[in-house]
Image (cartoon, rainbow, N blue to C red):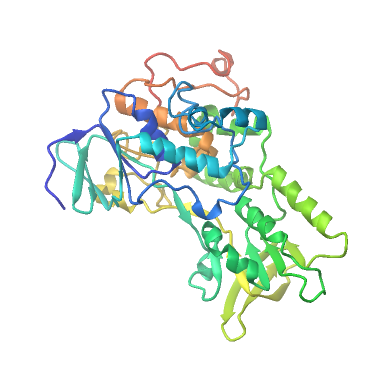
Length: 450
C-alpha cells in the first residue's frame, strides 16, 4: 500500500452503478464538497447482457439519477433527451418508461461529464487513521477521506447446487452474448420467475416449434419454483411502500419481522411487468392457432439438480413439484439461469473491525441514515440495506432521495430538500403527530436524516 496522502477528501465513493453515479452527479454542483468516485470497471455499463431490443426500464423516467432530488439538474434524463434531440419524439411516444438502452446511454452521458470519476480502480480495503480519517486502497493508489460511501451493488447469483456446471449454461446477466447459440439449440430451459426470465422467454419464443412436428423449431421450457408468474405490482398505495415513512416503519421492526416481510414483498419489485406478461400470453395465443407449441411453463417446480452429458449434448434436469411432492426428469440442450442477483461482498470494510456494526446474521447493521459505523457517520452504504430499509434499497426511484439524505449527513445541511412525508398511508398505529401536515411536506429546516 502507498504512503498516506496529505490531501483529505470529504467523500470517496466506491462503486459506480446507477446509485453511485447518482451520488456523484448530485455531489458535482456542491462547491464545498471534495469528492471522488472509484470503480473497477473501465466505464459505465448497466446490465449489458440484457439490452434486449424494446426492453424498458421498470420505473418512470422521473426515477433517473437526479430528478427526484433536483428537477433542475443538468444531469436529468430530460436534459439528456434534449441534448440528443430525442425530447420531442419521447413526448410523442407517450410512455413514462424509457427503453433500457436509453437509460444506459443516459447514464454514460452523465458519467462522461463528471470529472470526479476514476475508472479502473478496484478497491481492496478501507482502513482508518488515528485522526479519524479513512484510507481507501486500490492497487498502488490510496485516497484519504472523511467519509466513504459503498455503492457496490449486486452480482449474478446462482444456487449452490447449480454452480460449476459444465455445458452450455448461462446466467441471464450474460444472455445477449449467448443468444445466437441459444437460438440454435434444439431445446432450451429457462429457470427463474422474474423480469429477466420473462424477457428471455419472450425473446426465444418466436423460434419455438410445433409440438410433435419435427424440424419446425426448438423446444422451450420455463421453470420456476414460484407458485405463479407474478406480475410486478404497480398500484399506487403499494408504491407507497417505497416512501420514507414506510422505510422508517420497516427499519424500526425486529430483525425477524423485517426478514419475513422481505421475503413476502420480494415479488412486488421482482415480478414481471404487466405488459410483458400480456405480450407473452398474446404470442402464445397467436402462435398456437395452427396447433400446440413445443413449450412448457411450469410453476411450483424446483430444479433440484442438473448434470451434463457431453457425448449426447444434453443436460438431465431433476425437477420437484412443491405442491404434489412428485419428481420428474427432463432433458434440455441448453440452460439459462435467470436466478437473480445477490449483494456483493463488503469485505473491503473488514479492516475497520468492530467499527462496522453487523446484525445477528452477520449482515451490515445499516442505520436509518444508511451509515454502518455505529453512529460515527463516516461509512455509508447504498443498495446494501434491503434487510434494514426494505423496498427502497434497490428502487431506482428512491436513489436520489437516499443520496440527498447521505449528502445531508456528510455536509451537515440539506444540500437538496429531503422529504419526510410523501405517503397518504400511516404505517403502524396513528398518533396526533402523524395527522399533522400533508404528504410531500419538506423536512423541518436544518434537520438531518438519522
